[in-house]
Structures are given as structure tokens and as C-alpha cells.
Image 1 (cartoon, rainbow, N blue to C red):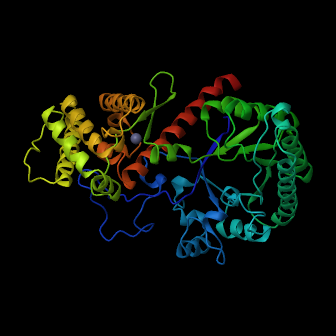
Image 2: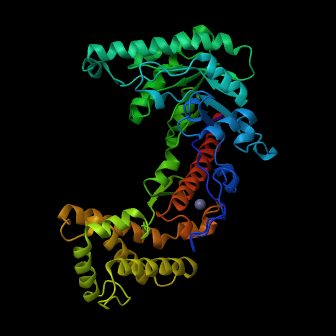
Image 3: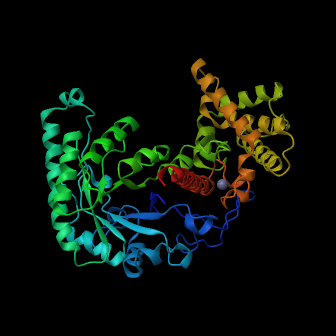
Length: 461
Ligand SMILES: [Zn+2]
């Protein structure tokens, strides 16, 4: 069986298991982390093969982490990563734990803010399976000689300085890590192909057989694959590559050919959480389809309240015009209703219809009408004073995507464990529903990845 592990970077992406989007209920006196569930606790199948935890995110007892509050940092060091992340049950025994220093979080600093010893203490006390050496990210990347000519001399000098820091740390890290249980990874950085090749060669000469390829997050897919093909030429047969921060699983066959055995990425989660994307697997090709999930802003949220405050008069006229044009099916003609009340009523109408449509699949048009009406009064771009031809065409495209999403009802057949909670739990709306959608996406990419690996089997036997 071909090996390709997907690591999910830990960023406290847990959700309240008692959240219900239908009535917005949650755990009473909810305590973050204690009452929350990680993706692997709430999904029906394992959503990754490993988790990646960064020192910059967790911090040390002396240096505060970017994502962890001090009490969580203390618990992390006390219990170790597996217990802390609640991966200590037998069904999670296959899940690997990888640690890194989180170089992206300090890429603006002159030097890494941690020492090799601090990093080793983090890996040792965390009980990690793999630990990545202390690196300093190198940007940019020149794909060929012509692109390299455009890199100013001082930029190349800075890249070289960071490569030396990374290699020097890798040397110290490899020697010191011999006394510990985790397996060390060296980090290869470069600003062009030759410098990357040099890094890989030097790491192998030091003795590394596990190497991560860093700093390629922003690169185009063809540039990445071209680089990997070149690196595979200097790769020793037993050397394994890990891609830092890159998913793009449609390339797994090329990755495997180049000796890449794992990757990590927050992209599936973030695409759901921030961009409203909902992934699904295509029936025949098992390709990932991306839909735009419908957005229903929270009327009570400050964003909508500020919007009302700012455009009160214009919204009042807009609602009156919409009423005349029969753009919604409720009666807001009572002149004693404030703009806030009108918008709240449109929200309640929209949510009630969405929920009914979810349960019955009836009245698609009425549901879509209520959704569009609410979107019109909460999205600034729809205001007559803001609306331009190009904005209108973008808005119409989104409307079409919303309609498509409603018609397809993909969430009704998804077995991830999140979607059974219904449409209201995956709407583009609240932090809880947005994060749930991101977690659903994680389940989908892993399913897709496993399918791709399986499909490679007959060819490799
Ligand atoms: Zn799902």
C-alpha cells in the first residue's frame, strides 16, 4: 500500500458538540476546550492521518504561544500532545503526531525566537512521533533563471542567510535529537531550484532521511511539481519528503513519484470557515466539487447592526421598494416598524423557510426568494447607491450558486457526521456553523485522498 499521510495543523479548531443551528442552542456555561470537540471526536471517520502542532502556536512556559492561552500551554506540557488533543483512545492509535517550530508565524523576525533546546523540550514533553528542525522561512521562490535575474542581490543574500541558519540548526538538532524518542525531520529551504537541491543534499549528508520542503505555500502547482521532480533526482532511495503547508491532493500521484510521503494543510478547513466553501465528492470521478454555501448573516451581529446604522434611510426606502415589487412574502408595510425590526423579520422568515426546505425539500422558490431578500438588505453591495454593473453581475453569480446549492441538497446525503445536523449547522453564518463546514471539508479531502491512494494500487503492484 502506498503511503501518503495528511497532517492537520492544530489551531484549536474545536466546536461545541451541543450547538444546534436550528435554535442556536449551545452547551450551558460553555467552557472552551473542556466542553468542545476536536474534528476527530465529532466526525464519523478519521479526518486526517496525523496532527501537526507548532511551538509558535503552543508557546513555552516563558514565551506565550500565538494560539494557546497560558493555562492550555501548561496543560499541553503536562499531559503531552496525545492526551491534550484527545487522541489517546485506541481508535486513534494510527494517528501520528508531528511537531514543528511554526516558522511562518515568525517569518518577519530576523532570527527564530526559539532555541534548538526549547524545540527539543517541546517535542519530548509533547511525546511527538516526529519533530521538525528549527527553520527560518525563505521567500520568494524564482522558478527559473529568468525569474532569478529579477531577484535583487540583497534579497538573495537574505535568503542565503536564512538557509544557513536553517542548516546550522538542522545539524545541532540532529545530534541532540539522538537522545530522544521522536524521529527528526530536517527542513530544506531555497529561493530557486539549485539552492533547494543544495539544501536537500546537505541534509542527507548530515544524516537526515526525513526532509520537509518548506516555503512553497505561495508557489503555483507546476512550479512545485517541477521542483519536486528535480529534488527527487538527488533524493536517496530511503529519504522521505514532507510538504509543509500544501495540500492540493489531485497531485498525489506526482508527489508519490517524487518521494513525498506526507503533507499538511489548513486549506480545507479555512476554505470552509472563511470562504464559505462546501466540499463534496463527485459521484463518478471522485473529484472534489466546491460549492458556495448560502450565507445568512446574523442580524444581531455588530456587522449587520453597523450596516443598518450606516444606511438606515437608504435601507428604509429599499425595503419599501422591495415590498412594492413583492420581493418577499411577509408584510412589512406597517409604518411603525423600524428598519431593524424589518430586517430581523426578514431574517426570521429566511431561516424558517430554509429549515423547512431542509426538512421537506418543498418550496424551493419561496425559500430562495426569502434568502435573496435577506441578502439584499444585509449585503452593502446591493444598496442602490453602491450597485454597479460589475457588482450586479458578481451578485447574480452568487445567487445562482446559492440556488444550485439548495437544489443539490448535497448535505442531506453526506455521512461525515456533521451534516446529519442539517443545513442550519453548516450555513455561512456563525463561528460554530462556519467551523463545522470547515471540519466537514476535512473529512471530504481525507476521503478523497484515501480514494486516490487506493486507485494507485493496481498500477504499483
Ligand atoms: Zn458532511
